[in-house]
Length: 81
Image (spheres, rainbow, N blue to C red):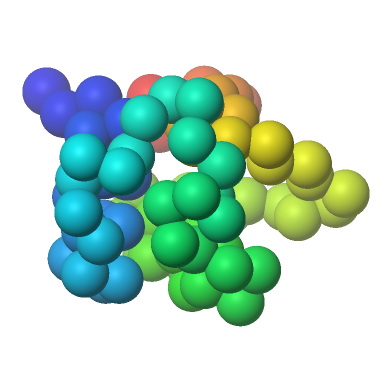
């Protein structure tokens, strides 16, 4: 089974042509090369891939691990884990 981090890494690499070596848990999305507009595109791709809905009510993502944790939480809440 693919972990959320692996799934996100694959999506980021495919969608934004980013070197997977840049993607570490502590890396900010900006460090990875993802701007705020790209973040929305990534969230939509994740929602489609996992059949979940991520509410963006004041979500603060400091780094890649925050995004992984958010998606894991949403998957658990929506019974898609």
